Image (cartoon, rainbow, N blue to C red):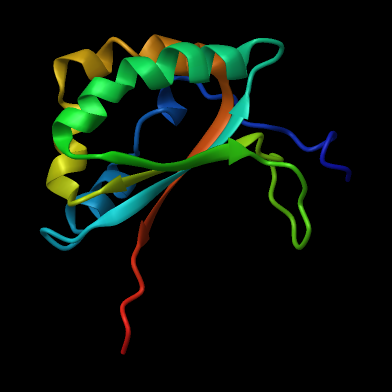
Length: 137
């Protein structure tokens, strides 16, 4: 089955929020431990990317900064070189967080909720990966 034939789960409201199990993983993450949130993004066509980068990211910028988050890197996915990565992500956005408390503060910021309709209409699919820093042994 080619990547074009693979079904892609739409980014409906249920796909934009963590499940109870996923929220539990975040809540059980060690206190005060920094992490990067790796955002894998598949945009709606034709204007999903433009709306996401042009409206959602600037709109969520204040809640992210106010909570202590910091954009680390963002970019377009060019090629899959090894393995399989459905649904063929369009972009990656890395945001660094000093702690889970900071991330949760961003999610509870009053301006964060106002950005979610833009995110939902911009994305066909998404995945957030909480990545911890490797520390020397």
